[in-house]
Length: 309
Image: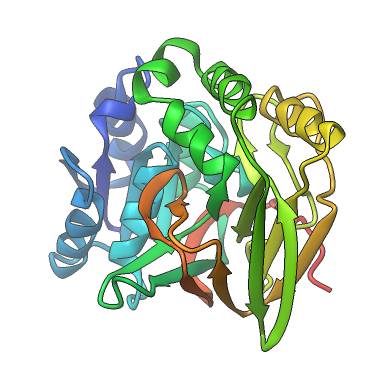
């Protein structure tokens, strides 16, 4: 017997895999006497709007099918509610789904909803840029600046559709030739730190998705109530390791790594910020952790990874 009786699926058709989505959903849910509905996203922000509408219409579970941008969008609509989220793999990397142990085959991930499972509390990062104080952004994975953001910009949807995760490798090779060292300054829970590097991340999860279940910083835990500040230095060795992580060859520990609940990013001014791969705004910015912000359906045997010390 399923815990859920009214399920709403938010589907991003642009991020979809070539698989019979509706047929599979109906096949799994039909024997369980579950009412289900679906909506299609057409533009940024639709996931948030559709999730909120689903809640107002009585949904007791919202399901995201798409990439990590779709997951982030849907989560935005679930904040301040007690309605949990289920995730189906549907994008290129599916980093959130891999982080939480969601099975990749569509039928298995739908079956997880109606079989034994658990709800895992997951944190969400909240961002406000100084130049747009009325605009609030959220991230499930990480906020990126510097080289990482340039790579995400270069790896267009067309490249990702054609080459999958290799699109990030191609973008990395192009951007590393032109990238310059920046000086990043953070105030982390009232402690000021400064570090030069090619890229800086404020991470809730360091998972990059892909076939090998890969994380660039395995100790980062999306349920520890903390944000992880990571700076990649400008040495050749670090650049090679970063490229290796894009190729899913190996993970590595960042040379500089801090943790905190509240982070002010003071420099470099005007640098572009992305949230879970989507362009959001510019530095300076303030970032806070929203602990236990959303409940996510995960396998019963799922174990949290990372170091919460």
